Image 1 (cartoon, rainbow, N blue to C red):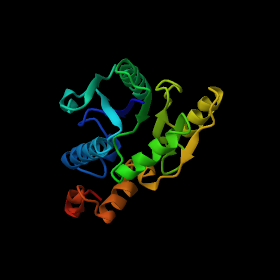
Image 2: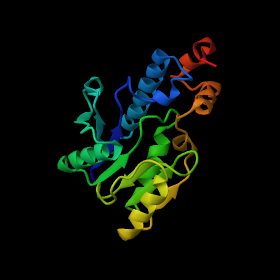
Image 3: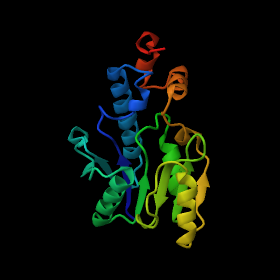
Image 4: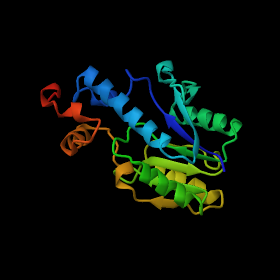
Length: 207
């Protein structure tokens, strides 16, 4: 079974603009890049993942070992749809869709999703509020139309059931932890996560 990961990523300068009141631009961009590279490295460490597709409008993210998919520019879900279609052309039987803002994710979290996917074609992980979707495993990759955004966990669950599958919803706290507001940034700073030590320079963080 060929498994591909799909990582949607905004252009670095445009990503996480909601954090502008919290972080200076150069710090925000550094955080965005660090989270993106961390997610990619965790995926690279999983030997059964055959390829990684990054969908973005930023060609600087076209790293040598990832398949770069140009963002069509019509929204997040259209971008994911384009990347999923590309992975199918590459022979993917399964797609794991992960956002690029998961600073705590570890290889074992990805392993847990893939293990669950051996017995079920749809596996999901929610966000901190258990409303959004922070991981979505699909076999085949287009079994469920991506509907990321507000209340997407229930939407993906309903779509999976309509396709004839009762999905597995995993509680993986490291994946549920994403970075969308000041509280999340402050918590990441307190945790002193390797690779994100630059956030501990409190004088660079706006009050």
